[in-house]
Length: 166
Image (cartoon, one colour):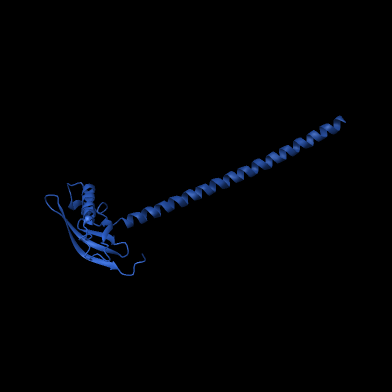
């Protein structure tokens, strides 16, 4: 009887060892595979980040803050503060009851046109988006910073999208 118990214990211990060996072998393979997947994912994310950064740099190419020549034009001045001043000056013209005077269209159905978004392209030009709630358009504006710091604006061209989706 003692022999049978010892035999069963021996067989049981061998089975435990086999299961432990198989478990740790598979765990090691799983860990290696997981590490490879994570490494591949990190590489893909780095590539995606590089592509996105490149797209952002291209999209922001026409920008006062990114254009070195335009920044040099305003040498000695705080370009970021100047950009805020120019932008606020355009938005302030929206308070006019007849609409923003930089937009050369009269109010339609009593709804004046107002500028929504602007992008300062360089030291001379601004492109802006405008609407009256129903129709949308864009306007190209020339701006000048006078010696005394005042900013003057001149409309170059306006485009109204007659078949707006809104």
